[in-house]
Image 1 (cartoon, rainbow, N blue to C red):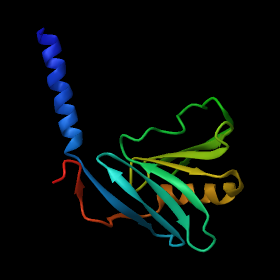
Image 2: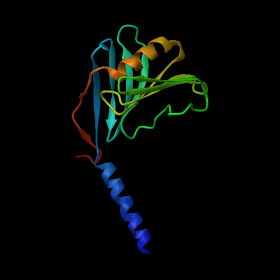
Image 3: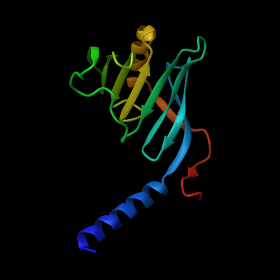
Image 4: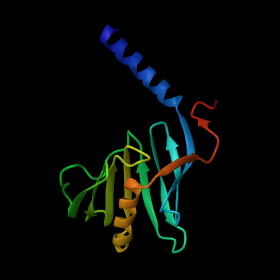
Length: 156
């Protein structure tokens, strides 16, 4: 076996071991000004996903976050969007629009107070609430709470 192949195998084993030893946990995000919403999900190593549920009317939105989370809405106008907007709110940049193929509102918030990358997804009929929600998420003081004990992938 060549040195190059052996090195690649060692790197592969190390990367699998590193990802397998990562932690995962359930979370809740509490934000001042967004008390009418329950934000919950599961975080795995360096990305997470969950839902934002409006407590009274039970309108829900999807959320993903973390440094390794794929940005749903890139910096330039993406193909397939009927409309696209970019806003600077305090230190955060919000990019959002309507993706025709998926029939969903999609937003990416870069630099939110509680995470470097946050994606939010909503249904078109919630557009007004969706835009208000992403603007608030970008600047609201939030705290992330682990709601269940830490679990390890390796059974430990």
